[in-house]
Image (tube, rainbow, N blue to C red):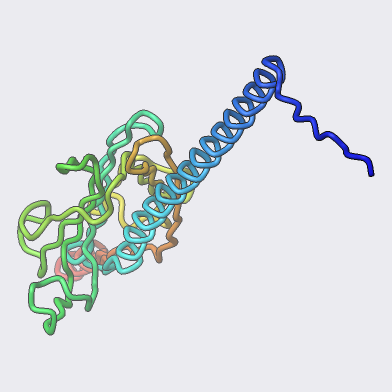
Length: 235
């Protein structure tokens, strides 16, 4: 009967050092991969947030422009664009509209405003940063650029550019009192995420029926009748 001696071999210092280095490398690679994945996910979320804000702001303004009142009498028509700088250089345009809408603008949810109401958009500051503000005042009164209720409607809006189409080119400022209603209005909005790391742009173009020119009755030429009457009296 033979007996087999079992020998136990211990790890050498070199093997322990190599195993430790391999463990450190694996742990470092795992940490780096997880960090990059987390950053990529955060950036994608921030990009989605910024784009959603830009889309919401552009769509909101476009909806009110579609409802802009267009009347032969300029008293009941107003679409005014104030140029606030170039896009990409902190553009801060604003727009004032007389809009026909049955949406609720008063505090009473059961009482729609109706008629021609003032709607104005601008970019302004809040406690959390820049935002798109919407001012409403219904019905329209003598002071179209004041009064009513103004409140931030879309956070994170940093630039607003609005242009009007005169039939040949895009104008950066417009006043329907002098220019009539434009053929179209183009809205460009730039918004940022909460962490300010990502910005996104959205654009809407709204076509409008141009207001017809006021009908001016022709002036009758009575000079011929007056001349004939004078000649007849002298005969």
